[in-house]
Length: 284
Ligand code: C2E
Ligand code: MG
Ligand code: MG
Ligand code: MG
Image (cartoon, rainbow, N blue to C red; front, top):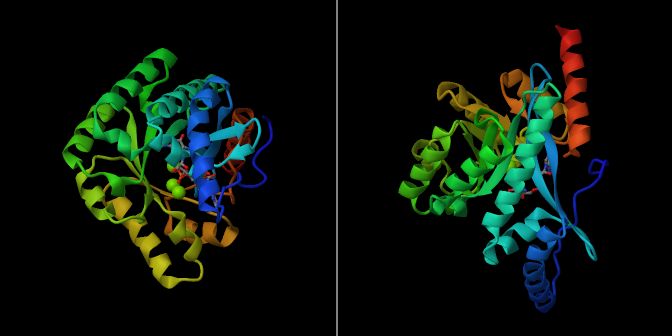
């Protein structure tokens, strides 16, 4: 599909619980066939340096185009996939797709970092480390250009195991990002306990910071915290020029959001990177 996403995929929210339940069960049953039938694919959202405008990475986001129902949002099907015990398979699929896409960027002269979302439930045992290692080998993608975004860290209950798994993955050269920082309950515990390289400020704070001095103070202090702790910081969900301006003034953050680009097809993302590079060359 060569079109960028003009709007968000449909999030199914029905009042009718019975329908909801049936929908969930049928969706769970379909996840396997969807994977086999090639109804899943990935789109890639640029990650950009706010000061240079350079695209230094992309985040792979999974999409499911159901043959009958049309696009289904990951917000809807990821939880179902988890309930169906299919997260490992889904993650393996996304990792493979993303690493192959990463090689395509590199072959086109763009040494971007490829980020892949991994649900925190997979950090409860060492299997995910093996999956990451196998995927890197099979795709010959350089581990140092792969980053895993750990989602829903508040759900990590066994820190000892999570630390062991993350440490093993990092020893391959893969970097770790904490997604949606600031949401949930265990984030500062996460911050001090888990080994990681990047922190993504949840868009709740980013979208409020222009009007709300408290939200702005949180964003400013997280940017500062990142500098002091030598962790790179990404502001998520940047939607307009005012938000970009606030972040430019704070300096040195990376940004992601509709203000820069919606998630794109692979071809479009490569072209976006070339465009940005031309812009940087003109500025330099
Ligand atoms: P996330 O990892 O925090 O990804 C950011 C989400 O915000 C994406 O939604 C993206 O399309 C959307 N977004 C980006 N910029 C903006 C903006 O400026 N404004 C607004 N309103 N939204 C923006 P998406 O693709 O629907 O994904 C939702 C969540 O589903 C992701 O949140 C991630 O937690 C999960 N997800 C997506 N793909 C995967 C995957 O392959 N594996 C796992 N485990 N989770 C995934
Ligand atoms: Mg993410
Ligand atoms: Mg996020
Ligand atoms: Mg999010």
